[in-house]
Length: 333
Image (cartoon, rainbow, N blue to C red; front, side, top):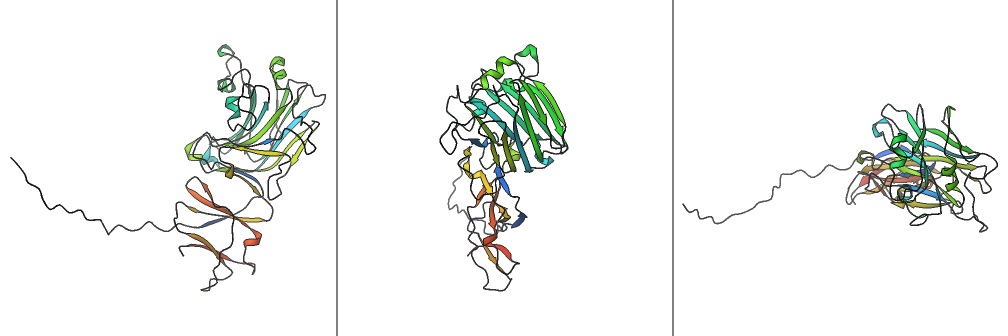
């Protein structure tokens, strides 16, 4: 049997409704250093790190090894993803320069460097937060030692963990006499452990401190934490930063991130975050002091960031309508 087919016409379905317009949302801006998972990788590291020299060009000293007094590293977290984003982490990494295969600008330094102290602060599904003190030695391009708790399986890398009601607040790790370690939670609870002396000796200066976040899950892409303070005390070149400037202090920090646009200083003059669903092609933000026709203008905002499935932009005080009240909208010109 033979079928002859001719005169076939394809017609577009013109009854398909266009996608709905994006919904604009507004939220108060928390001052500090907002560190966001803006890259498309669930294992991205978004870090800042200490500089190798101070403003006068003198080498910095951030290691506790051989220091006659206790050395403390403190991170104050002012905002953090909720329990729905469990596994999201903030972290402190202490990494000696010796043995770094790609130098201190490596955003995956915790994986690539052979010697790393890793203090992880993560949220849990019940809303609590847990800090873990972990380390690895003589293990480049790997991280299995961090998570090992079984002495029969090799060197134990997880030395301590302690939880608190929330990840928000100040977490501090203090090291003394080379090997003694104290972890302190925001509520003041402490746990004390020690690391082997032979391992501690590998963390002598020059040493870099990295502070940042990692999403640890595709559902956490676009999430962020705001750091209100980072302090390093007890060393010859201490660090104290509350991130109140409009730019990151280059005398103290360098950005080491999978996507540097996700490291965002939020000064006290910042007022709001505007966000809307992507892609929103062709839409622009406008502002007005009233809803009257013809009053809408370009508020001259900064860079629009892609955070997961959303676009977001910071609204400084200078971009607010002068009348003291105002409105924002998304439109296609």
